[in-house]
Image 1 (cartoon, one colour):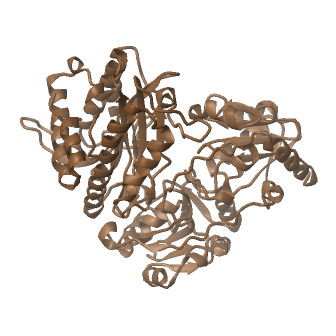
Image 2 (cartoon, helix red, strand yellow):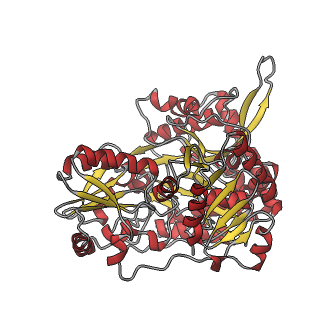
Image 3 (cartoon, helix red, strand yellow):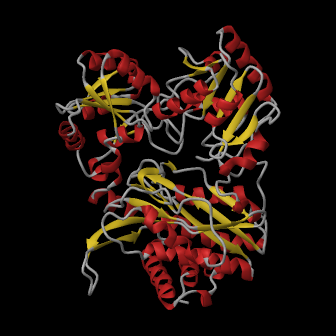
Length: 604
């Protein structure tokens, strides 16, 4: 099993660990320390040895930060984790704050004593973040200090070793473009921008550019490493050499010089000695790299990761692969939904059993490499927690009259999936059908949208909310995020949200996942993945328009649909989608599941 459900958090451990950290800070003449939920690469998933925030506080969420001063401490989490943080953390030791509404910089300004020295590990903070904290410390009359050697590591006596999972070449049949051609495109762009070199710090960018994959973090096939691209077309890759076998060396030999990870600092010094102009992405680059370049004499140019946009625009092979992955995944999900429809109304199915069964159906494909994230398996009130993660402590049964929300995904060599379905256990109430249908109307509005080139996700986001807004309702998350190709399930720069300012381009994959959440009662989300299609003319139109192709293939629960709320056009879309699902999936299903699918995709 790729997902575990143990709840090992013990809030009381944080009391002693904070005391030990404070002793270490006193020994070093420091008055406080910043502990982000981050590693050197600023990714969504981090390896066990970088789970410093979790070790110190007990908090296991995917985003957060703690600040420990000698006389007080605070932990900052976003709105997804306001309940979780109080369950996992000793709040008398670490006072909880909202990461956005009460940001760490403001807390620093208000709580740091004049003359204090607040320390940070420059490997674990971005350039932009350090700048914010420095300003806050100065407003308090204090100083922000970069330290050599993380003081928390000094007191974490059983800290795991850094990962050394083997790297593998990603087959050209799935990648669709040789690494040499990708690197050639990237380095040509550097020349046109008058840049001598670019530092790649995001492992998904490195995985894409060099056509390699790894297994250093959960759920995303990343090889933790750094790279430097040079305007002369060459590249250097800095990676733990234990990860690189003979086949990978042969694969990389034509496109990169391999170096131990520890050699990065020397390479940055060499760029500085040449007075090179070096591109970094300040939103993701560790401050350590920026500071080393500046100290060595390089001219640092700020800009976006050069891999981000080309990686987001999938080529023909990647789109072909993701279609195959979604067909395979759709059959597994449909088998699960048929099983759920038979077993859940009888009783005896709980959230963990459902998540395990869904994973087992995916494993039966013999193509599953990992889940793309821990399955969100939320029954009743737990479904109203947007990023709920079931544990043995929170596990609850699926009961008649409740809604069950399951948000899950898989990693296959040919693609990454992410899909959410909300299912009525027994009969849905009139209110539940109303809310579900309004969410469905928003989902259909996005799926059927046509829009001109240059349109951003922010311009489309309201389409998904309109039916909810008309009833005085809304949801507090974005409507869609980008998705990688056997890479990160959350990929930028594209997204459909109020903050999604990057124009959508052909080949970009985005999720379409409007929702509604009634605290303490139920949650609803309907999620498919879409790929942006090339611009084409509409009959009678004057301008070519982009659109979406729906990739996900799985039935939407008709028992939750209030037909009277759908327009005829919306009902036609749902019937056509279900006909497509039935036609695509039925040939690979057993007779019983195929019969269930026939009913689940009936025309309305």
